[in-house]
Amino acid sequence: MRYAAVLAALAFASCAGTQPVRETATLNVVVVPDTASVFVDDHFAATARVFATRPVNFRPGVRHITITANGYFPHDVEVNLPAGNTTVRVELRPIPP
Image 1: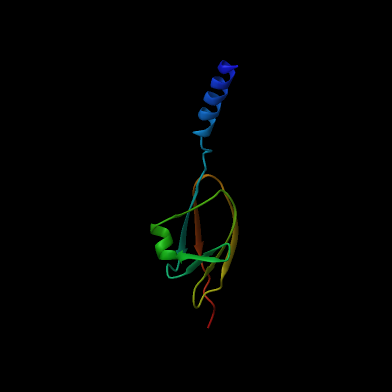
Image 2: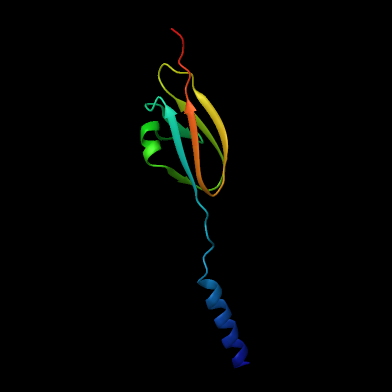
């Protein structure tokens, strides 16, 4: 009986210290013009200038990206971010005068 209790305690202790590994998806957005604003899942993430130098981490999965800038048509893209690094490059189209 005592032997079984010790084995159960050891098994529980070995499992309790194991944390699930969380994979990270790193998104880098490069936009022309670099003054554009980048929104991910309808939340402001950063300007394109900042985003290009400081990628943002997310959980892997589908993300909706919207890029806007004064004088340019907005651009929407849906990206399935895998674990690891993903770069999205967009050149916004100017609105004609």
